[in-house]
Image (cartoon, rainbow over the protein chains, first blue to last red):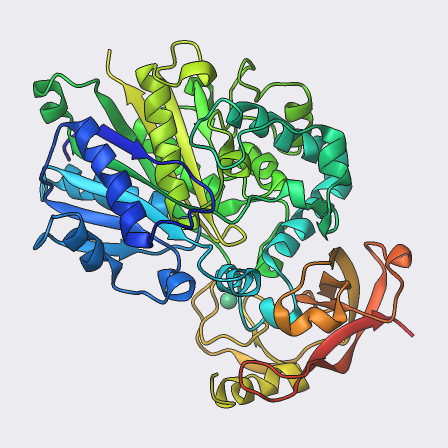
Length: 385
Length: 131
Ligand SMILES: [Zn+2]
């Protein structure tokens, strides 16, 4: 296997993008990544996208987007793993460059979610859960994580305030991210008093509906050195799945797929949780970040809520989590999220994260999760000295 | 709109609680599976779910999918049945502030919603306080 580096990253402003279509958002974002990489032609493309079919009635977007990007004739395919689509696309690109099949791969993620109304968006997102045995009973996505939240609160004493503190922390980071959908701060009181969605979760515990894309360019590390680019290597990649329905997991509060994907990434990289300088994790709901930090071993099992309260995961804390603002503040265009996480870690490792810059980080990790946790993909990145 | 066949196929589970069991693992699967994910056994035997269990966790859905609009707010929980199977389902006929984890529940056959994607009335199990 060859060492693989990320040499280009691109993102545009996320939010409700009425004026642009899926293909236009994609092209604008992908061009930024190609420009940043200093590359104008790639060998292949992977596009992470959960459900262009349900959101804009368009499948087959690999060919569509390579055509509109002016990269006609290259291999181009959409990768789907619900909300983990983007992270899995990164893994596909990583494997393709590492194997020697391609020398430059454009990996992007995109979702155009506001071309349908709220009911249709809820339906599309619901298709990531078990339609016959979860959706059939009226269970929604916030509902699934609410079931995890109540179980975590009763088992470990996690408080309603601690859940809110995840949103407060991530919005504080996101306020310094110009691409974020909601770049403003919120208070614990605002979160707890916001509209109830699925008890104990309120609307400010939930990531929003977002249009947006993110893109990265992967090349052999050798080529990045030749091009005199900052060499940010992908040193670990781990991917795992778990029982599809939440009820069938051995422990409702434990994300086994995240644990396994993390272990696989740590194993490949030869790293431990203590080696990480920052993480971008899948905070689709506040409780998710708490459970993820536990499963990745950066905090002790059951202490996820207490760690947020103690400021351990804050920007200036022991291990900063979601410096970008996370899904919560930055937005969650489902398929784009996993790629945008990679972009944030690369920006941090290059020292280009502006006001939200962590002091001199060397190693960062991403964790991108699908459904109620049945799929998780993790990557570990390291800046070459 | 999909054909009613998708609904019809699930009737043995939803109406009659048909499940299956891996004897070597002593585990019951619902919905029934062709292969035991724990040991790979393909000779699973038919069984029927227990009717009673305890509430493990629950939520009150206040922003429902469109076909559940006239029912909201409603409670959905995960119930551990007395045979060890864990099921997702609505908890009804109980005030929200009287609901608590560990409470005893039993299954009842109820209407789920009026018109699903196949244009028919959909039925299945819900949970009510044990009586
Ligand atoms: Zn078995």
